[in-house]
Image 1: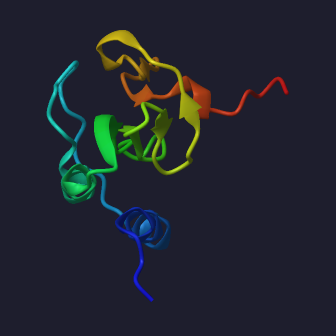
Image 2 (image 1 turned 180 degrees about the horizontal axis):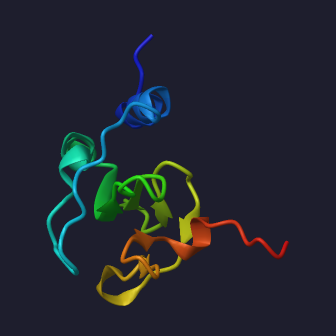
Length: 112
C-alpha cells in the first residue's frame, strides 16, 4: 500500500515527536526555515498539491507547525489540519513573552 507524502510526514512527526532535537531559535523575523523542518518542507514543496507559507519547529516550547495553501486556495496548519484565514505577508505567528512564535488558533483557550 502506497502512503501519501503528507501522511508519511505526519506519521514521522508523531512517531518521533519525543525524540526530535529542536534546532536553535533563529533571530527575529528571519525568513529561513528551521533546520529540523527543511526535509519536510522540501517534500511538501515538491508536491503540486500544497505550497508552504510559513513554518516553525516550536523550539521545544510549542508543537512544530507548517502553514500551507492547497490548489483551491484553502489555508491550514499542516499537522493539525486546522483551517486558517488569509493573512497579509503570512503573519500567522504571534510571539510570546519569551520570544517564541506560535499560531494562536492552535493554542487551547484555558478559559473554556
